[in-house]
Every structure is written in structure tokens, then in C-alpha cells.
Image (cartoon, rainbow, N blue to C red; front, side, top):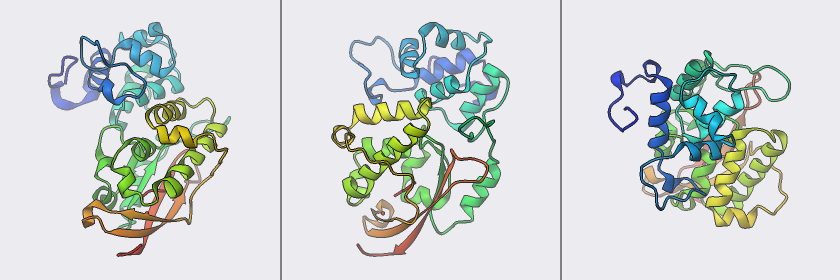
Length: 285
């Protein structure tokens, strides 16, 4: 689609000029679904340049330069923050990188002083597909869904949505409290402990910063729980209960198998092993 909502020629973001893409991407984001944004009194749909700049933590002038297609030394943090604010898919994020700095993004990056390490997306998808019949998925450091298998899509149809994010769904989606049995004790509190842990280890990561802000602004329950100084590194081996919509609401117990590839400490791979089929469960990472 073009900036006014029409169809983008060929449907391929790699063929479109960056200014047209950025205008389209920000105008498709519903301000009503962005925590902390005032949507009343707006004369147009979508986000403004001011909105994107504020949410990404940069000046309007700097974001405006990007949207005008001006060549500059845009940082990885800045481009990833823009990607997060605009809820870009992996293909769209790739187009943003190629058109702004002339190189593709890495699928996952190593934190610390080392150079970013790319992850083979095809190999990752093959690994997830081979986990069938167990649902399996991968997220980046900020819990954005990167890849998943068919079984996970059957359990959680929302993962195919634009900008699908595990943490945002858990805290901001109404149905999460029905599907995640013992939502506060087994899911919300451990997840906030995970978020606090990652923020402590990656204090300058824009994606984590935006995630923390969105959850605390959008969820009163999260705000009430946030004062607990819990730090949770992972949930590998934990037992959880799920109420599955694809099974007419029956409950199942799953054991979380949480992994990280040897070449990256910011990519999470999670497999959900079903312990029982009818009984007393999403995603732990």
C-alpha cells in the first residue's frame, strides 16, 4: 500500500522508496492501541512523525531525516526502536535496514562488546518445524515473535498478527487471562521478573525499554506487581497450565523447554512439551 492506504506496487517492500514505506507503516498503526498516546482530536489516521520520534526516544528532526530518505549514520538501536514502534515484520525490518544503511539486519545480536552474530533464519525455521507435534517458537530479546511452527499457530492464532509480541499479549490482551491458567502467579509475576532481568542486563536496549513502558502504561495489574524486586533468568523446565481455544477450552499441562543458540544470547527458542492432554500452561521463556 502507499502512504494514503492504497496498494503498494507489487506488494514487495524492497521495491518501494523508504519515505513511502515509512509513511505507510506509521499511518497503519492505530493510536488507540498504543499505550500512552492521546488519540482524541487527531485529524488523520495512524501515527504522526512526532509520535514515532517520541516513542523511539529521538528528536523529530532525526526521525524526519530518516523518513525523508536522507543518508546518515543511523544506529542499530535507533532502527530497531523504529521497527518496534511501527510493529514491523521481519521482511519490513529488513527493507528498513537495506534502504537506510545499505545492509540487512541480523536476526539476533550478541549483547556486550562482541559483534552482532546473524542467525540462519531457514535453519531456525526447520528446527522449529521438526519439533512437531510440540508447539515451538523463537523470540528476540524483547519477546517479539521471530518464527514459530504450525502447532503453535493452532494453539495461539495471535502469533501471526503484525508485530506479535509475547509479553504485550500476556499483559494487554483480554483473552490471555483466560488462556494462561493461574495468570498472575504462574505467568505475570515470572514474566515481569524476566523483563526486569533483561532490562538490568541490557539497560540501553530500545526494544526492552519500549516494552516495559507499554506494559506498565497499559496494564494496571503489571504496575501493581512491578514493585516486587523479582529477577527471573528463565523458566526452563517449569510446568504451566493452559486453556486451549483450539480444543474447545480444555486445559493442558505443559513443560517449558527454553533454549538459546550458542552463537547468540539474545535469541530465545522455546518448545512446549505437553505433559497431559486433559487435566489440570503458554509460553515460558
